[in-house]
Image (cartoon, rainbow over all chains, first blue to last red; front, side):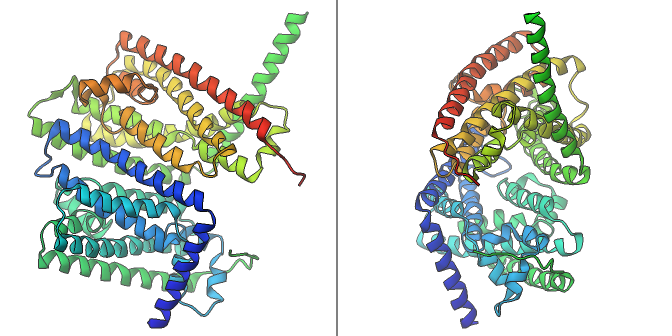
Amino acid sequence: MVKELKFLTSLWKTNLAAAMEYRVAFISQSIGMILNDGVYFLIWIIFFDRFKDIRGWQLTDMFMVFGISAGAYGLSGMLFGNAFNLADIIVNGRLDYYLSLPRPTLLHVLASQASPSGFGDFLYGFISYFASGQFSPDGFGRFILGLILATVVFVSFLVIVQSLTFWLGTGGALTGIAINAMVTFALYPITLFNNTAKLILFIVVPAAFMGAVPAGFVRSFSWSSIGLMILAAAGFLALALLLFQLGLRRYESGSAIQVEV
Amino acid sequence: MQQFTRRKRGGARTKKYLAIFKINLLNSLAYPAEVATRSGMILIFMAVFFQLWQVTFSASGSQVLNGLTLHDTMWYLLLAETLELGRPRLARLISQQVKDGSIAYLLNKPYDFLLYQLASGLGESLPRMGILFILGGTLVWSMAGAPPALQNWPLAMIALVGAWLLHFCVNGLIGLAAFVAEEVAPFEWIYQKLVFILGGMLIPLDFYPSWLQTVAKSLPFAYMMYGPARLFVRSDMQLFVQILAGQVLWLAIIGGLLGLAFARGMRRLAINGG
C-alpha cells in the first residue's frame, strides 16, 4: 500500500513537472477554466434573480453544489486525467504499455496524465464554496471530505462506463454521454426530480453523490449523509475495480508499437 | 464570351465546394449508430430542462411567462440545443491544423481554405443536427406537446442558417488564434459560455431583466441562438427582420475579421519541408 502510494506520488510529481514545461498553456487553461465556470454560473444568478426558489433550493445551494461538482471534476482531471480517456486507451491497444510494467495497471493508467484545465475547475470549486457565504471551519472540513468522496464516485463511474469498452469494442460515445449525464444531473437542484429519477441519480448515474448529497452534508453534518457517501464511494470503487479486472481478461493486444511519453 | 467563361468558372467553383460538402455529409452518415449514440446527449438535456421549467412554471402559478408557455420554452430550448450540439467544433480542428502544420496540406490544394472549412463543416453538421432534432423533438413532443406551427418553420430555418454562419466565423477566428496563442481552448470555452448566457441558450432572453436583454441584443450572441429559437416558437415578421438585419451586420463584421485574420496568419506561417 505504501509502495503504491509512493508510486502514485511520483506519477503526480511527473505530471506536474510536465505541465510546468508548458507553463503558459497551463496557466491560460487554468485561468480560462475558472472564467468558464464563473460565466456558466451566471446562468443560475440570472435564473434565481427571476424565479427565487425551486422547491426549496436557492442560489446559495447552487453555489455549494457547484463548489463540490466543479471541485470533484477538477480533482479527477488533475490526479486521474486518463479517467476521461480510458475507452480510447483500451480501443487503441495502448494498455500494452501499462500491462508490461510491474505496477497496478488501472492505477498506473489513470494517474499517467493530468488535465491542466482540471486545476482551474478545482480552484473554482473552492471559490464557489467561499462565495456561498456558508463558510465555517468545520463546514470547510466537511467540504474537503465531500470533495474527496465525490471524486472517488466520479472516477469510479468513469472507469465502470469505459470498462464496458472491453465487451462493446467501442466506448467513445458512451463516455461522452456518461460525463455529460453526471455533470448535468449533478449541477441541477435534486428537488426537481421525482422519486424514480432520484433513485436513478443514486444508483445508475450517481450524480447525487457528486452534487446534492455532499452539498447537503457540507451545510449540516449528518451520520446518514456521511454513511451514504462512504458506502457509495466504496461500492462504486469496488465495482470499477471488478469490471476493469474482468475486462482485462478479454483484452487483446494489437501488438502495435506505441510510444508513451 | 468573357461573361460566359466567368460564369463557367463560377459554376466549377461551386461544384468543387459542393463535392467537399457531399463527401463530408456521406462521411458523417457512414456510422449512423455512432452518430445516434453521441446525439443521445440531447435526451438528457431535454429531460432535465423539462423538469426545471415544469417546476418553474407551476411555482409561478401562470401558464405564460414573459410571453412564453412551457410548450414554447421547451421547443425553443430544443432548437437552441440542436444548434449548439450540432455545430462543428471548427475552432479545435483549425487550431490543431495550425499547430501540427497539417494546414500546409490544405493550403496547397486548389480551393480556398475558409470555403473548404465551410463546406466540410456544413456536411458534418447537417446530419448531426437532423438526428439531434429528431431525437430531442420526439422526447419534447411526448413531454410538452406537438411542435410549433409549420408556418414558423421557414423563418426559423433562415435565421438558423445565419446563426450557423455566425458560429462558423467566430469558431474560425478562435481556431486561427493558434497562430499567435499557444492554447486556444480557453477562448472556445468562454465563447461557448457567452453564447449560453448572452445568446439565451439555457434560459430564453425573454426571462432576463430588461437591461440585460438590451445588452444581449446589442451583441452578436443573441443572433446566434435566441433569434432562430424564438422565431421557431413565435413567428413574428418584425422580429424576423430585426434578427436578419442583425445577422447580416454581425456576419459582415465577424466575417471581415475572419478574412483579415486568415490573411495575417498566412503571412506568419512558416512551413519547413516534410
